[in-house]
Image 1 (cartoon, rainbow, N blue to C red):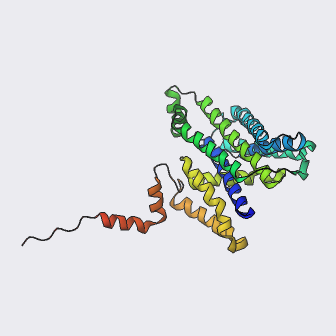
Image 2 (image 1 turned 60 degrees about the vertical axis):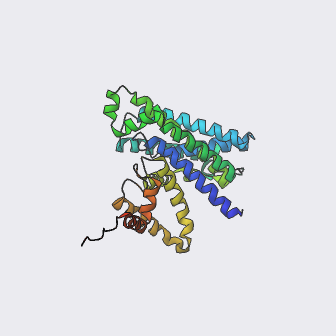
Image 3 (image 1 turned 90 degrees about the vertical axis):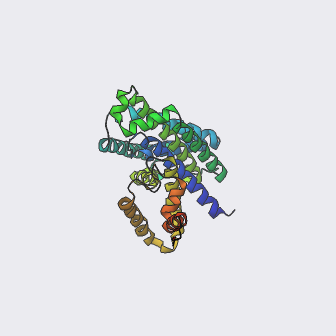
Length: 297
């Protein structure tokens, strides 16, 4: 496989990890603009360990993920006293604080960044994707996953049923930060160089778009959104700088005609196919229509 296709596979896999990491938080009804900070924590922690202490990539990535997860839990306790727009603003502030800290730490390269990391491979990235997706799929079918859905749909009713809503939200926030931190570690060793500007608000918005585009209520939808939007610049590379107009035009059209995302909660793979190819649905309906019975003279 050429280096070009390997790069695409790794970029798509890392974006899928970022998307499912944020989806874990969104699955409890929380909107966060701080996941770029957790990605940065994982990236800088793993890069520091691999460059300064010669720690292999996989252990360094796990340590970076744990650091991001702990950071997510620490941020979650005060932040989750807020909700909706106020929570989004608080996490946005945390992301900006983290970026400034990265920029002012000489041990982390300061504003010049860190370089020289390597070791990420498509196999490693996609093994991480499979493990993360399998874990979240199983979690969604457990009592904890059902509790996540209950909190998302009606927090007051969930409290009335005896659920510890605060613990559930902190758990979701911490798990999402952990997965995002691991993705950040792989990202740093994929790009060979990181600097604080890579983990700003723009990164958080892009990851949020993956989830919104696919589905905020369906794990497979967030994966679908991450894959599709990751490949979009490659498919429309012939448009050069104009591809952004097509990119945003697609998102505007989605918000108008499908605000719940391409892969809504009630959509199966067959329904998604029919949404993309509506003529196939019409043909199926015509073929299923009973033929007219012959008239009796």
